[in-house]
Image (cartoon, rainbow, N blue to C red):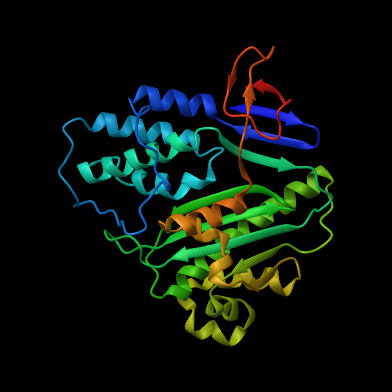
Amino acid sequence: MEVTRQGSHLSLAQSRYASDLLQKFKMDQCKPSPTPFLSSLRLSASDGAPLSEPELYRSMVGGLQYLTLTRPDISFAVNQVCQYMHNPTSTHLQAVKRIYRYIKGTVERGLLFRSSPDFTLRGFSDADWAGSLDDRRSTSGACIFLGPNLLTWTAKKQSTVSRSSSEAEYRALATTAAEIRWFCYLFRELGIPLRTPPCIFVDNISALHMAANPVFHARTRHIEIDYHFVRELLAHGVLQTRHISSHHQIADIFTKGLSRDRFSFLGSKLNLHFVSFRLRGGDESIGSTTNLSTASAVKT
């Protein structure tokens, strides 16, 4: 991982690691792809022919898992291909290669953190209902910001089947709420004050009504634990929920494949920038020149 600091800005990138992966799997001369995952693609265990050398697939996917440490834009795509490690097929391998083609065009991209007096925690929660063709489980997606800076993100298949889109959204909301509570405890230990209650933005109105209206309890016994957990946080005033339009729901990028324009729009909200990395001494550089042209770096 490359850590670069310039004034009040701090950037995290894995440009060298990404370049090494492309060379290792002979993808360094491939044609770049605008997105890591096709918007029309739904992977299934029965798609394609079994691979004669599944070890290559597992090695390629394993390398991508480490790259998600600084690349939230590939989290969903990597989560999808990770689900077929036990018996990969030719279709799954093509999906992995598309991720590498996307990395080829964005190898110098990294997370940018800015110094800010804003200590507001904001979460974005979303779910793709019954998105898995194999077991019809939903995919949860979420990201949490402290002020303008992205703290954490997730793209994960839910552990149980949801019987409605509202249930899937509410499970994602409860998971995001638990993550935000963990950060609240951490900031309290570090002596960092949170002047306002954290807020989670959800684009499903039914899920928001379930969180705010106790009358819905009789219809939601199958998600009773998640229901009471979120309700208690709202009742005590330690958490807020608000509606956001689906167009501006950032967590959508963690739940499904998107079109080029939609992916670019949401990706721009994740504080991903092209980062220049320069080895100590300044004799060798990786990446293109950016507005952090005089940045110094430490490789860890």
